[in-house]
Amino acid sequence: MDTVEIKRTTKETEVLIKINIYGTGKSLISSGIPFFDHMLTLFSRHGFFDMELKAVGDVEVDFHHTVEDIGIVLGEAFKKSLGDLKSIRRFGFFKLPMDEALAEVVCDISGRPTLIYNVSLPHGKVGDFDIELIESFFKGFVDHCGITLHINLIYGKNTHHCIEAIFKAFAKSLSMAIEKEPRYDIPSTKGVL
Image (cartoon, rainbow, N blue to C red; front, side):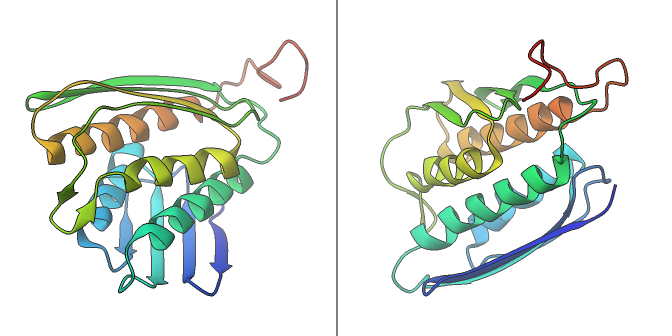
């Protein structure tokens, strides 16, 4: 599969992503937000997505615009990579432990953007990263990729572990959903997604 490149430039951010969704998990990530870089790196690794990401944003204001726009661009990149959605499994699910935390992510590459974010974490930060931005990232991704995504944090105490479990489970479920299934033409009884 070819590498897809998407660029988004606004007055607040500039985001460039190059991705091969059928890769080996190599990444080069630079968003100016170290904790988020860590999450995107492990997303790439555990999903086997080869990804280069360079983002420059108004992080002196806060991280919101950069995180949300990365979600938007990554969603667009996956949508473009998937093309006509022929011969994919469509559905993916994964339950993943990270020490004391357990997360479950289920996705449907359906063309119908829906995010169910059932995550109860205290408001606050991991380092200097606002925890509430995780939902903003996933909302941007879902809306621009056109998938249904259910994220459930079943339990956990350490916030870093909880978020890491979510990102790893997201990677594994998405990787499962995009796997090639040659018995399908379009994975829908409607004949179209």
